[in-house]
Length: 348
Image 1 (spheres, rainbow, N blue to C red):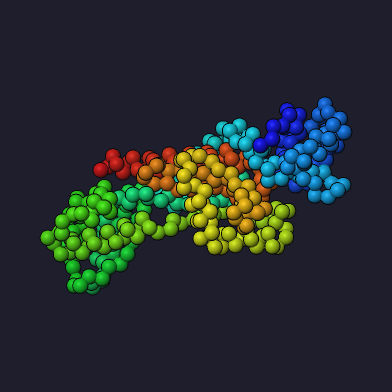
Image 2 (cartoon, rainbow, N blue to C red; image 1 turned 180 degrees about the vertical axis):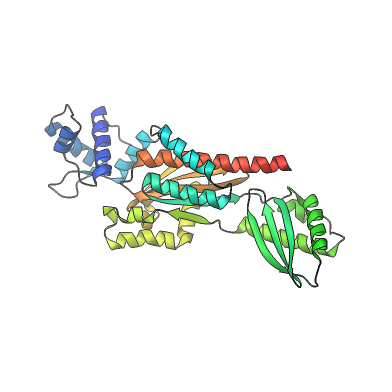
């Protein structure tokens, strides 16, 4: 990155801040008058021309002011990444909302998506935490009718699966409850690997249910986690998306979840919990994001359960508001996931 003078840094940061707020090209007169600068408009024009030559700004039309390039936005983000803070009043409000919600994973994911979209005025993306090593908590076996039984399987981390089993012969509720009690005592806290190495159970029903549990846990580990989104209309009403083609590309990203999954997986695989990443213009890899930026973070407990959250918006998004919001919500979700796992371990 080219070394900028202090005056160039000041002008570049002010120009980008102004463009983020107005969505209009910024000229030298606007900077001089609006920010009460001590530089002449001629000096500002010369510096803006130099910043354009360096690749931080561009001029949409000959007579127009300047707008930031992708490189300009990257410089802006790098300068304020660790400076932007979420006001304490906003932090308190968000924390209160979470602690007033039901202690359920789906409730937390929906609330996180809503808060991120509202605070950033972008479109939020929240991926439910992935259980990195599925562990058994308990099952319930409930007789329904005839040979059919409802199996409710609960894993460490709060994931709950239900399925209807069809047994070879009718079984009383008393026997089903006895089987569930034996298996809960035997399997609590075990991983799929540990359960797979257990000797065959002497009771045929116990063995059949154990095999079904193993199958369900293996499916849980390999399945794609659910994605929660909110605020798509926030992005589509921005001037950058007034052209239907750009709007269509953005919509496509959310309609074809596999692309979104691929993007999030590639950008967060090697990142630390709580670490932020900012993608600007798709970083030359995702055409759907050519006019967008994304602020992404991982949350959760390493080695146990982790997820991803972020905000997508126009390249002109308010990074000063979005970055600390994403960071704060990621921290809250990490704490909630950690508390859930800790309480389960205490029960065990």
